[in-house]
Length: 219
Image (cartoon, rainbow, N blue to C red; front, side, top):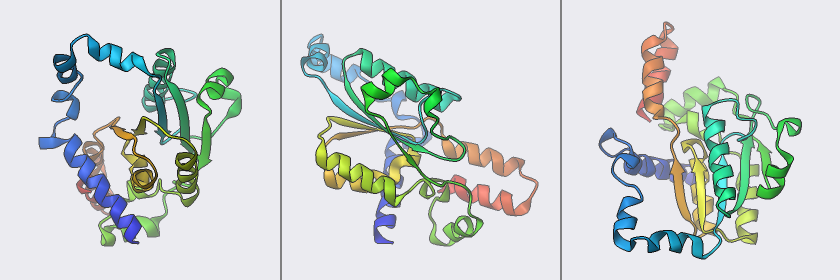
């Protein structure tokens, strides 16, 4: 329970940093500050050593069946093209399964991709108990002890310069990452999730769903 509460607090802190004053981080922070400080040498610094990056995905980047998959896949391919040593660890679910026949074999080999199944199907008991515990069930249902152990095992074996967290849904693993790696963490928030839940709350005709969506939007 304590480990779970720590992860939730970390998620809240990250959200506060990324959505300062309800705005997006990239509206105020980008590479310009580094470029102004280092000039053209900034790009030479990036190219000087081959970076090793771990991309932790909340669903398989391939096949690119929706916007999230497309964004993760494009980033991965871009990093590979820029000679980054990339490793991918991805959650797969009933909604987004791991389908080897639809994956680029060369891409999988280059990224040493690993896929871990996590049951994210809605459990109504867990969903409504999260209201009492004040947790975001929409995030915590992506936590899996199996994936947590896999990440620990990888980090004990390999060192990374940076770890990309694809969406806030993989934030519950930050605690384990921090304990076993000194890599820089980069959170890519694909959507402003709370706005989606606010909209669903307004659209829901069922009172229970309306209250639950409203609760999610406030977490």
